[in-house]
Image 1 (cartoon, rainbow, N blue to C red):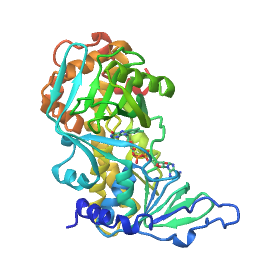
Image 2 (cartoon, rainbow, N blue to C red):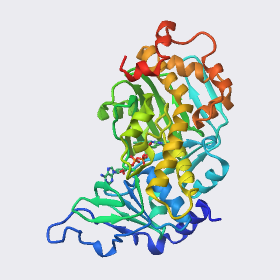
Image 3 (cartoon, rainbow, N blue to C red):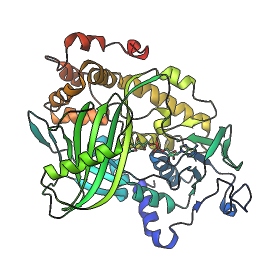
Length: 429
Ligand SMILES: Cc1cc2nc3c(=O)[nH]c(=O)nc-3n(C[C@H](O)[C@H](O)[C@H](O)COP(=O)(O)OP(=O)(O)OC[C@H]3O[C@@H](n4cnc5c(N)ncnc54)[C@H](O)[C@@H]3O)c2cc1C
């Protein structure tokens, strides 16, 4: 059987010969061209699978399906598929085979990680890794079974295909919707928001593993911590992160807070290399049945479009990998109905498993006062490493739940009790 690692490795070896062959910019009519766009000669109007949106989930799924021989079209509204991110994950979030498949895309790997709180600091031996948008994008471009259409907005998903801005249609028996997050009444959220700045320092920073949370900082705008990824001895990505009720982001303020943090650590910034920002959903309550009632029958959502993300971190790379495996397991030919059914069953199952996470999130957002939210995490990080690993991997056991909530809660007990009911939270109480 082909594996992702094989496909990606093959694609990477073809990179120099063929890096842009599979790209077209077909969507919008340009002056002096037809409504099909000026590079339409490359457009296949019929394919096996068409994916609306070329983000993380779409690209991971497309690479996996390409290994099995499916032809895939990805239609991305933005200038490029994959955006501009560093996607990180704990090695224990993935099954070993899946980790091996992702290996060619991994830009950084670390043998451990640490956390810092006002009362204690801890080193963990859980390996951590990052893939970059560049690596994922290149793997997709290099894959001859995948055709990408960038600057091409999907106007409509209809039965058996998609309609692009400008009227071009692409037909496929399997239509997947990977257009990212869409608000839904059945999903009550808090936010993890951040600004990240990648900087080159004048001298080595001396960090050899990521700091997942440095919460020994002024607590403002909710639970606040700095996330620090050492990318080379002198290069570091620093993110000012807040678990906030408010989904708006003051980019300038957080950007200067990042630079102040660097200065405070004694790091002299020689050059600003890159910035990134995010406002990620943190699930407080989810009415999964109502959510799916609103998903049109003629499309199969994946990724954030299907509300598939880790409820407490808002991250979704490991879930995208699981989704890709799930769809790959359906065999050939693929149909929208088969993929939709499989994702629906998966989402229902996950939703049940994640009820406890949403309860913890409600404790964090609703029971703890914003400046005291760090106490919840400070307490959590005293638990056994294996439990913490299972928590991030979304695989906690009943005994883990007991351990997490045992003892005196770090929030007022009356408020904690009010967080128990998800129905109450869905009603906005
Ligand atoms: C700065 C940043 C850092 C992050 N770091 C991590 C991390 O370390 N680990 C992790 O697991 N997660 C991380 N995340 C979260 C992760 O990026 C998201 O969970 C993930 O991208 C969701 O994948 P998706 O494919 O569902 O949606 P997206 O990646 O958002 O992709 C949706 C795509 O659809 C396109 N689109 C939307 N509408 C249309 C349309 N009408 N027609 C065509 N295309 C359309 C969009 O342009 C976009 O490219 C980070 C997010 C950000 C912003």
